[in-house]
Amino acid sequence: MNEGSNVVEMSKVSKEFGQGQVRALEDIDLEIRPGEFISLIGPSGCGKSTLLRIVGDLIQPSGGEIVVNGKSAHQARLDRDYGIVFQDAVLFDWRTVEKNIGLPLELMRWDRRKRSERVQELVNLVELQGFEKHHPWQLSGGMQQRVSIARALSFSPPLLLMDEPFGALDEMTRERLNLELLRIWEQSGSTVIFVTHSISEAVFLSTRVVVMSARPGRIVGVVHVNLPQPRTVETREDPFFADLIREVRQLLRKGGGFEAEEPEDEEQFIVAEENL
Amino acid sequence: MSSTVVEPIPRGTLASRVGSTLWDWLPAAVVFVAGIALWEGLVRGLDIQNFLLPPPSDISQTVWTERDVLWSAAWFTFQEALGGWIIGCAAAILVALVLARWRILGTALMPYLIAANAIPIIAFAPITNNWFGTLNQSSKMVIAAILCFFPVVINALRGLTSVRPQQIELMRSYAAGEVEIFRRVRIPNALPFIFTGLKVATVLAMIGAIVGDYFGGSQDALGIQIRRQAGVFAFTEAWAAIVIASILGILFYGAVAAVERLTMGRHPSARGAE
Image (cartoon, rainbow over all chains, first blue to last red; front, side, top):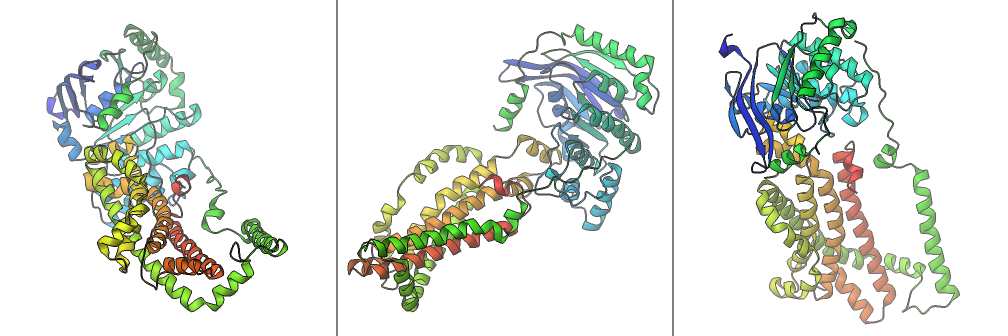
């Protein structure tokens, strides 16, 4: 494997919150190649969202090394090498759909004409034609999340970080957006790191599923998903699909994923750090 | 993939925000007319002495006959209020920006700002009269400015800092610096809060200017007129001056509310921070 060509390389990455009281992540080694669709799955509080934020240089690791696009995570953030999508769409209420999508382009000082052309492309990509002038509160949850995805893709970043983007949506919207995301992934050719709670979603979307243990989060195992591309509605009925689900479940069990849940205070620590 | 067609959620309150229909105003108008009629009827029916409570008909007549004196006095005092409002609000917004940018300063000073907000600042009027000159309009502007400062600074700071952490994370993911985060997230987020403060401040500025006058001021000032007329038992004239002061206060508040609507007609939080 050519080392330099990896999009993300992590070695011995760890994270502690609150002066070592909470060990969120331990000993994370992971290499992600261009064009991969990687899911991170694990029980609540296993640090998968934290790991995603470490890749995005939004949280600093306590130890280990991380390289994004051949440079430090910090430099990769400054170079705008990734787009991020949260569980909450995080749209700005005072901006219309098109202005929300164009926000990164405004920050990158694209001129108005180029910007509106690009925004229109993205509106078409996520199929929100006719809603350009709407405000976020006029949209359904699924549409808001599509705006958020379009915004993350607006500047064509090589890496897309997604933190449970469909977690708050109903099952049907979620499956539809799964298919849509795969189509976008194929078209854009970017690498995706996708955090999820859902085993079937992880298997359906990914080329590899990284299974993490309960706190402190470690990688229990990696499942290669060799289902045919492109994935369709029938993929879920493939007998191999059920096998892969079983494999992920076994790994989750091995990592203590089905034991009693610990209180989820990871978010609180993230917020607390933010306010420092 | 099939696209979801979702109609925009109908906003029932949009009409009442952008401009109410006649019907929406009718109940309030009925209450106003009934209130005036009741006042007039009670004063006449119970034969209440003029120095206790003059009837509205006398007051409105005096407003009309004395209009030149009253309006020039009102304008004089309104300048004091407006000047103080501009100085106080501008200073408050600047201070709030500094305190929001360097959070440790905000944390250190916030308790004192809240405590200072509870001080009856109007009590300082005789002292500012002494500092800036009793007859000088600036002595009243100072009182009005200090009164305006605290609610605006507290509201603005709350608006600037009550940003969701993920909005900041998102901006950082775009490598946005502090200036961009203020310009595109914190300030737009704070606008409804700031306008709430600005509206409260209009009322405080009028109080500051008029009560400042009570402690001594130019013969042209409205507060002086009210005090002098009341002093010579010309209560109808005093009431007429109060009516003028009220009209000005309402217009001042309404003007700021109108600017708020123009700025953020479509901002959903325009209602939330009321």
